[in-house]
Image (cartoon, rainbow, N blue to C red; front, side, top):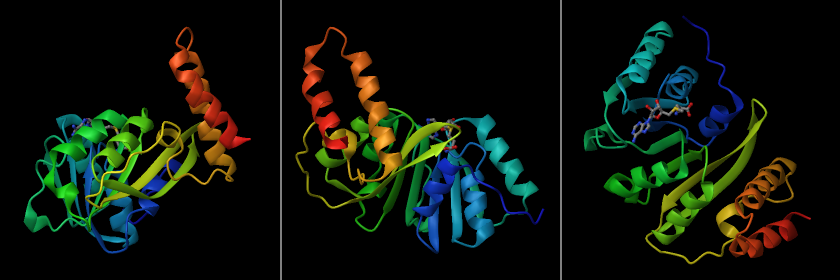
Length: 218
Ligand SMILES: C[S@@+](CC[C@H](N)C(=O)[O-])C[C@H]1O[C@@H](n2cnc3c(N)ncnc32)[C@H](O)[C@@H]1O
């Protein structure tokens, strides 16, 4: 099939943060649409698409065949465990998982501590835990954006290892490097405030961060 894949806005945003000519590790690839689309458009030259579960991996393999995509290898396994040095991976995408799982995957792999590695991370929940993890463990965010996809607002981060841990304040865990003049980014923070307000019923420890977030988006 010669058609390009139309990614949804969330995956399109992830794809936009992958670098030209990258060799990609697509962790938790599921349908593998991201890798297939990037290969078909010629933006990347090679991908390892991996998944911890057999069923999604199989659907990815079927899609690669359906779209006639070469230069993609499918591997069953957790996180980045199946990546080999000869894959010469330059960019990693970990999308569509919780922030805490993404942190665990980054933490257990030496590959992510290569300063030239571009990590594209798209947490479905708990982005604040991921941002805390990154700064406490020597990573830095280079870009962060939000996107609305199927009526929901998601954040996408690109990060790299600098080796320098940085202390961040409570509000930064939520805002990260988002440009708060942008309406979609503000929408994301408003949703985080609502979530914190629901969580804080009867728990005053969250009041300070809620107030601070309200102040930064006025
Ligand atoms: C919701 S899907 C996201 C698929 C795709 N990345 C996206 O963003 O549309 C999450 C996928 O991650 C896989 N997964 C969950 N934990 C994983 C892990 N530790 N290592 C690799 N894959 C994992 C699941 O099997 C599932 O296919």
